[in-house]
Length: 317
Image (cartoon, rainbow, N blue to C red; front, side, top):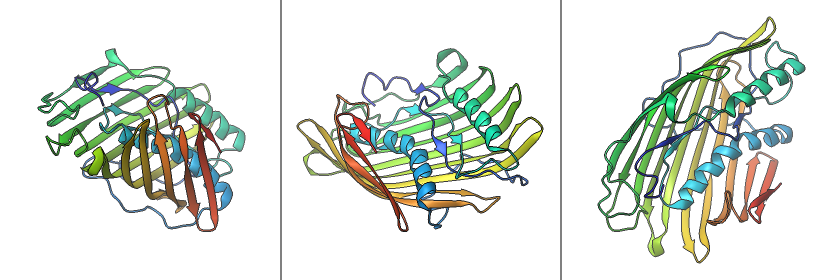
Protein backbone atom coordinates (compact mmCIF):
# COMPACT_ATOMS: atom_id res chain seq x y z
CA UNK A 1 0.00 0.00 0.00
CA UNK A 2 1.41 3.41 -0.87
CA UNK A 3 0.46 6.74 0.59
CA UNK A 4 -1.93 7.61 -2.22
CA UNK A 5 -3.85 4.41 -1.50
CA UNK A 6 -3.84 4.59 2.27
CA UNK A 7 -6.70 7.04 2.66
CA UNK A 8 -9.29 4.42 1.78
CA UNK A 9 -9.36 0.66 1.36
CA UNK A 10 -10.38 -0.71 -2.04
CA UNK A 11 -12.70 -3.67 -2.51
CA UNK A 12 -12.96 -6.18 -5.31
CA UNK A 13 -13.89 -9.70 -6.21
CA UNK A 14 -10.80 -11.36 -7.58
CA UNK A 15 -10.74 -11.15 -11.37
CA UNK A 16 -8.41 -14.17 -11.48
CA UNK A 17 -10.36 -16.90 -9.66
CA UNK A 18 -8.79 -19.04 -6.99
CA UNK A 19 -9.87 -22.62 -7.75
CA UNK A 20 -10.22 -24.61 -4.56
CA UNK A 21 -9.08 -28.07 -5.60
CA UNK A 22 -11.42 -30.32 -3.68
CA UNK A 23 -14.18 -32.75 -4.59
CA UNK A 24 -17.62 -31.96 -3.22
CA UNK A 25 -19.71 -34.57 -1.50
CA UNK A 26 -23.43 -34.98 -0.85
CA UNK A 27 -23.42 -35.02 2.94
CA UNK A 28 -24.97 -32.79 5.59
CA UNK A 29 -23.32 -29.47 6.48
CA UNK A 30 -22.04 -28.38 9.88
CA UNK A 31 -21.83 -25.01 11.58
CA UNK A 32 -21.36 -21.92 9.44
CA UNK A 33 -17.77 -20.61 9.24
CA UNK A 34 -16.80 -17.51 11.16
CA UNK A 35 -14.05 -14.96 10.51
CA UNK A 36 -13.34 -14.33 14.20
CA UNK A 37 -9.92 -15.01 15.71
CA UNK A 38 -6.41 -15.40 14.38
CA UNK A 39 -5.63 -17.48 11.27
CA UNK A 40 -4.44 -20.98 12.10
CA UNK A 41 -0.94 -22.07 11.10
CA UNK A 42 -1.87 -25.75 11.26
CA UNK A 43 -2.13 -27.78 8.06
CA UNK A 44 -5.55 -29.25 7.33
CA UNK A 45 -4.19 -32.47 5.89
CA UNK A 46 -0.94 -34.44 5.71
CA UNK A 47 -2.21 -36.61 2.86
CA UNK A 48 0.07 -36.80 -0.16
CA UNK A 49 -1.30 -35.53 -3.48
CA UNK A 50 -0.64 -37.65 -6.54
CA UNK A 51 0.78 -35.80 -9.54
CA UNK A 52 -2.56 -35.06 -11.30
CA UNK A 53 -4.09 -33.74 -8.07
CA UNK A 54 -0.95 -31.71 -7.31
CA UNK A 55 -1.20 -30.08 -10.75
CA UNK A 56 -4.79 -28.99 -9.99
CA UNK A 57 -4.02 -27.88 -6.46
CA UNK A 58 -1.05 -25.82 -7.68
CA UNK A 59 -3.44 -23.87 -9.90
CA UNK A 60 -5.72 -23.44 -6.89
CA UNK A 61 -2.97 -21.99 -4.73
CA UNK A 62 -1.25 -19.76 -7.29
CA UNK A 63 -3.52 -16.66 -7.31
CA UNK A 64 -3.53 -16.21 -3.53
CA UNK A 65 0.16 -17.11 -3.35
CA UNK A 66 1.13 -14.58 -6.02
CA UNK A 67 -0.97 -11.90 -4.36
CA UNK A 68 0.56 -12.54 -0.93
CA UNK A 69 4.15 -12.54 -2.20
CA UNK A 70 3.61 -9.50 -4.42
CA UNK A 71 2.13 -7.41 -1.64
CA UNK A 72 4.82 -8.52 0.78
CA UNK A 73 7.48 -7.57 -1.79
CA UNK A 74 6.02 -4.05 -1.98
CA UNK A 75 6.98 -3.61 1.69
CA UNK A 76 3.72 -1.79 2.39
CA UNK A 77 1.24 -4.44 3.43
CA UNK A 78 -2.22 -4.95 1.96
CA UNK A 79 -5.15 -2.62 1.45
CA UNK A 80 -7.44 -4.82 -0.61
CA UNK A 81 -10.06 -7.41 0.23
CA UNK A 82 -10.95 -10.21 -2.17
CA UNK A 83 -14.07 -12.23 -2.68
CA UNK A 84 -14.25 -15.98 -2.11
CA UNK A 85 -12.29 -18.57 -4.07
CA UNK A 86 -14.15 -20.84 -6.44
CA UNK A 87 -15.13 -24.39 -5.71
CA UNK A 88 -13.26 -26.95 -7.77
CA UNK A 89 -12.30 -30.58 -8.15
CA UNK A 90 -9.56 -33.11 -7.61
CA UNK A 91 -11.23 -34.98 -10.48
CA UNK A 92 -14.55 -36.40 -11.68
CA UNK A 93 -17.92 -34.84 -11.03
CA UNK A 94 -19.16 -32.89 -8.00
CA UNK A 95 -20.99 -35.23 -5.66
CA UNK A 96 -23.96 -36.59 -7.61
CA UNK A 97 -23.36 -34.30 -10.60
CA UNK A 98 -22.05 -35.53 -13.91
CA UNK A 99 -18.83 -34.08 -15.27
CA UNK A 100 -20.82 -32.04 -17.82
CA UNK A 101 -23.04 -30.64 -15.08
CA UNK A 102 -20.00 -29.87 -12.95
CA UNK A 103 -18.42 -27.91 -15.81
CA UNK A 104 -21.64 -25.96 -16.24
CA UNK A 105 -21.61 -25.12 -12.53
CA UNK A 106 -17.97 -24.05 -12.65
CA UNK A 107 -18.63 -21.82 -15.66
CA UNK A 108 -21.28 -20.02 -13.62
CA UNK A 109 -18.83 -19.65 -10.73
CA UNK A 110 -16.22 -18.11 -13.02
CA UNK A 111 -18.79 -15.57 -14.19
CA UNK A 112 -19.58 -14.67 -10.60
CA UNK A 113 -15.91 -14.12 -9.84
CA UNK A 114 -15.49 -11.72 -12.77
CA UNK A 115 -17.79 -9.13 -11.20
CA UNK A 116 -15.99 -6.14 -9.66
CA UNK A 117 -17.55 -4.82 -6.50
CA UNK A 118 -16.78 -1.12 -6.17
CA UNK A 119 -18.25 2.07 -4.80
CA UNK A 120 -22.01 2.24 -4.71
CA UNK A 121 -22.76 -1.13 -3.11
CA UNK A 122 -20.12 -0.85 -0.37
CA UNK A 123 -20.05 1.12 2.85
CA UNK A 124 -16.53 1.75 4.13
CA UNK A 125 -14.99 3.29 7.23
CA UNK A 126 -11.27 3.87 6.64
CA UNK A 127 -10.25 4.24 10.29
CA UNK A 128 -7.41 6.34 11.71
CA UNK A 129 -5.17 7.65 8.91
CA UNK A 130 -2.25 8.80 11.07
CA UNK A 131 1.16 7.96 9.59
CA UNK A 132 3.67 9.85 11.75
CA UNK A 133 6.81 8.78 9.87
CA UNK A 134 5.15 9.04 6.43
CA UNK A 135 6.29 5.58 5.34
CA UNK A 136 2.91 4.49 3.95
CA UNK A 137 2.19 2.25 6.97
CA UNK A 138 -0.58 3.57 9.19
CA UNK A 139 0.39 3.81 12.85
CA UNK A 140 -2.69 2.02 14.17
CA UNK A 141 -5.77 1.77 11.98
CA UNK A 142 -8.78 -0.50 11.58
CA UNK A 143 -10.90 -0.11 8.45
CA UNK A 144 -14.31 -1.76 8.12
CA UNK A 145 -16.46 -2.46 5.08
CA UNK A 146 -19.85 -3.89 4.18
CA UNK A 147 -20.94 -4.74 0.64
CA UNK A 148 -24.13 -6.19 -0.80
CA UNK A 149 -25.95 -6.29 -4.10
CA UNK A 150 -27.07 -8.32 -7.08
CA UNK A 151 -25.27 -8.89 -10.36
CA UNK A 152 -27.02 -11.95 -11.76
CA UNK A 153 -26.65 -13.36 -8.25
CA UNK A 154 -27.07 -12.10 -4.70
CA UNK A 155 -24.06 -11.42 -2.52
CA UNK A 156 -23.29 -9.88 0.83
CA UNK A 157 -19.99 -9.66 2.67
CA UNK A 158 -18.36 -7.60 5.38
CA UNK A 159 -15.18 -7.47 7.36
CA UNK A 160 -12.22 -5.41 8.39
CA UNK A 161 -8.47 -4.96 8.07
CA UNK A 162 -6.08 -3.65 10.68
CA UNK A 163 -2.62 -2.17 10.16
CA UNK A 164 -0.04 -1.34 12.83
CA UNK A 165 3.36 0.26 12.24
CA UNK A 166 5.70 -1.60 14.63
CA UNK A 167 8.51 0.95 14.29
CA UNK A 168 8.71 4.62 13.36
CA UNK A 169 12.33 4.31 12.22
CA UNK A 170 12.52 1.52 9.66
CA UNK A 171 10.81 2.93 6.58
CA UNK A 172 7.84 0.58 6.81
CA UNK A 173 9.66 -2.76 7.09
CA UNK A 174 8.14 -3.73 10.47
CA UNK A 175 4.36 -3.91 10.57
CA UNK A 176 1.42 -6.16 11.40
CA UNK A 177 -1.50 -6.51 9.00
CA UNK A 178 -4.60 -8.59 9.73
CA UNK A 179 -7.82 -8.97 7.77
CA UNK A 180 -11.08 -10.89 7.90
CA UNK A 181 -14.11 -11.24 5.66
CA UNK A 182 -17.41 -13.10 5.96
CA UNK A 183 -20.00 -13.37 3.23
CA UNK A 184 -22.84 -15.20 1.53
CA UNK A 185 -23.55 -15.92 -2.15
CA UNK A 186 -26.75 -17.15 -3.73
CA UNK A 187 -26.99 -17.96 -7.43
CA UNK A 188 -29.94 -19.19 -9.46
CA UNK A 189 -29.22 -18.90 -13.15
CA UNK A 190 -31.20 -21.18 -15.42
CA UNK A 191 -30.42 -24.77 -14.47
CA UNK A 192 -27.61 -23.81 -12.11
CA UNK A 193 -28.06 -22.81 -8.50
CA UNK A 194 -25.96 -22.72 -5.39
CA UNK A 195 -25.84 -21.00 -2.02
CA UNK A 196 -22.84 -20.76 0.25
CA UNK A 197 -21.37 -18.93 3.21
CA UNK A 198 -17.65 -18.32 3.51
CA UNK A 199 -15.08 -16.74 5.80
CA UNK A 200 -11.47 -15.80 5.26
CA UNK A 201 -8.78 -14.60 7.66
CA UNK A 202 -5.24 -13.42 6.98
CA UNK A 203 -2.26 -11.99 8.80
CA UNK A 204 1.16 -10.68 7.75
CA UNK A 205 3.63 -10.03 10.57
CA UNK A 206 7.03 -8.57 9.62
CA UNK A 207 10.31 -7.49 11.23
CA UNK A 208 12.96 -5.17 9.76
CA UNK A 209 16.30 -6.59 8.63
CA UNK A 210 19.54 -4.90 7.61
CA UNK A 211 19.68 -3.04 4.31
CA UNK A 212 16.01 -2.07 4.32
CA UNK A 213 14.66 -5.61 4.02
CA UNK A 214 12.37 -7.64 6.24
CA UNK A 215 11.40 -11.10 7.38
CA UNK A 216 7.83 -12.17 7.96
CA UNK A 217 5.14 -14.79 8.33
CA UNK A 218 1.92 -14.92 6.32
CA UNK A 219 -1.15 -16.97 7.24
CA UNK A 220 -4.32 -17.33 5.16
CA UNK A 221 -7.41 -19.38 6.08
CA UNK A 222 -10.53 -19.89 3.94
CA UNK A 223 -13.66 -21.85 4.90
CA UNK A 224 -16.89 -22.35 2.95
CA UNK A 225 -20.10 -24.31 3.37
CA UNK A 226 -23.19 -24.59 1.22
CA UNK A 227 -24.92 -26.44 -1.58
CA UNK A 228 -24.48 -26.53 -5.33
CA UNK A 229 -26.53 -28.14 -8.06
CA UNK A 230 -27.53 -28.44 -11.69
CA UNK A 231 -31.04 -29.50 -12.69
CA UNK A 232 -32.49 -31.51 -9.79
CA UNK A 233 -29.16 -32.96 -8.65
CA UNK A 234 -27.50 -31.23 -5.69
CA UNK A 235 -24.48 -31.65 -3.46
CA UNK A 236 -23.51 -29.99 -0.20
CA UNK A 237 -19.98 -29.12 0.83
CA UNK A 238 -17.81 -28.07 3.76
CA UNK A 239 -14.46 -26.95 2.38
CA UNK A 240 -11.35 -25.37 3.87
CA UNK A 241 -7.87 -24.38 2.79
CA UNK A 242 -4.82 -22.94 4.52
CA UNK A 243 -1.64 -21.18 3.44
CA UNK A 244 1.31 -20.78 5.82
CA UNK A 245 4.46 -18.98 4.61
CA UNK A 246 7.77 -17.78 6.02
CA UNK A 247 9.26 -15.00 3.87
CA UNK A 248 12.29 -12.74 3.64
CA UNK A 249 12.67 -9.66 1.45
CA UNK A 250 15.89 -8.00 0.26
CA UNK A 251 15.83 -4.81 -1.86
CA UNK A 252 18.15 -4.48 -4.86
CA UNK A 253 18.75 -2.01 -7.68
CA UNK A 254 15.75 -3.17 -9.73
CA UNK A 255 13.22 -4.29 -7.13
CA UNK A 256 12.94 -6.88 -4.38
CA UNK A 257 14.09 -10.48 -4.02
CA UNK A 258 11.73 -12.61 -1.94
CA UNK A 259 12.69 -16.03 -0.57
CA UNK A 260 9.91 -18.16 0.88
CA UNK A 261 8.95 -21.56 2.20
CA UNK A 262 5.74 -22.97 3.61
CA UNK A 263 2.79 -25.26 3.10
CA UNK A 264 -0.64 -25.09 1.48
CA UNK A 265 -3.27 -27.62 2.50
CA UNK A 266 -6.92 -28.30 1.79
CA UNK A 267 -9.61 -30.44 3.34
CA UNK A 268 -13.25 -31.42 2.97
CA UNK A 269 -14.50 -32.13 6.48
CA UNK A 270 -17.49 -34.06 5.16
CA UNK A 271 -15.64 -36.53 2.95
CA UNK A 272 -12.14 -36.56 4.41
CA UNK A 273 -10.69 -35.65 1.01
CA UNK A 274 -7.77 -33.26 0.96
CA UNK A 275 -4.02 -33.01 0.79
CA UNK A 276 -1.02 -30.73 1.06
CA UNK A 277 1.88 -29.29 -0.88
CA UNK A 278 5.12 -27.86 0.48
CA UNK A 279 6.25 -24.67 -1.22
CA UNK A 280 9.75 -23.28 -1.71
CA UNK A 281 10.92 -20.49 -3.95
CA UNK A 282 12.93 -17.39 -4.71
CA UNK A 283 11.25 -14.68 -6.79
CA UNK A 284 12.24 -11.25 -7.99
CA UNK A 285 9.60 -8.52 -7.98
CA UNK A 286 10.02 -5.49 -10.22
CA UNK A 287 7.82 -2.38 -10.38
CA UNK A 288 7.59 -3.00 -14.13
CA UNK A 289 5.80 -6.35 -13.68
CA UNK A 290 2.35 -7.21 -12.40
CA UNK A 291 3.71 -10.57 -11.18
CA UNK A 292 7.46 -11.34 -11.09
CA UNK A 293 10.29 -10.97 -13.60
CA UNK A 294 12.34 -13.96 -12.47
CA UNK A 295 12.62 -16.92 -10.14
CA UNK A 296 10.87 -20.20 -9.41
CA UNK A 297 8.29 -21.74 -7.11
CA UNK A 298 8.49 -25.48 -6.40
CA UNK A 299 5.49 -27.44 -5.10
CA UNK A 300 6.16 -30.85 -3.55
CA UNK A 301 3.82 -33.47 -2.09
CA UNK A 302 5.42 -36.83 -1.30
CA UNK A 303 7.06 -38.02 -4.51
CA UNK A 304 5.16 -35.56 -6.75
CA UNK A 305 6.47 -32.12 -7.64
CA UNK A 306 5.79 -29.18 -9.92
CA UNK A 307 7.96 -26.14 -10.64
CA UNK A 308 6.62 -22.80 -11.84
CA UNK A 309 9.19 -20.51 -13.49
CA UNK A 310 8.87 -16.74 -14.03
CA UNK A 311 10.69 -15.03 -16.87
CA UNK A 312 10.14 -11.62 -18.44
CA UNK A 313 7.09 -10.67 -16.35
CA UNK A 314 5.34 -13.93 -17.13
CA UNK A 315 5.01 -17.57 -16.11
CA UNK A 316 6.50 -20.59 -17.84
CA UNK A 317 5.23 -23.82 -16.32
